[in-house]
Length: 231
Image (cartoon, rainbow, N blue to C red):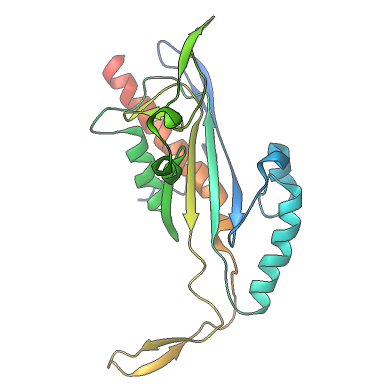
């Protein structure tokens, strides 16, 4: 049985391992639709719940409404990027080889329908960076080490660092569109395929609570694994 039916109840979980007491909160939103990304200068987490697109940028949400509506009217569809950040994750969850936290997250996110790509932290942008530019420097702090950056997305060597865990998930454009597309029959003959009736112009919008839930499920698993190994 799939764990997804119970997952929506888990985006905020009380965590009480023997050495830490924290609330893990996984919050997600849409950061890009059809190649049009939000302006980080306008980011407002409270805005995510104020619009139907789960968008943290009110200006971008207004543009996206027109963008998605145009795609619907033309019988096409658009892709989207969903970002999810989990705060309160303690350092030490995961493993350096098997049960790596980032590998488990990638596996869970890729299991969501229509997902075609996953990034942890800076993701593909790290490939365009330098070693020193991609590093997350640390300094002594009053309550332990303090990071000066979080390019790694809260995970280093497969293990959580105590920083926010960030994931970006790419959803493809809905494949069932009204526009006829060339294909072949079972006999190999040329024909066209198109969808009639209900049409979803951007399935990625629906993916926000699913991404949040899968993040929560992975973290719940990692908490249990950590407790089993460390007590």
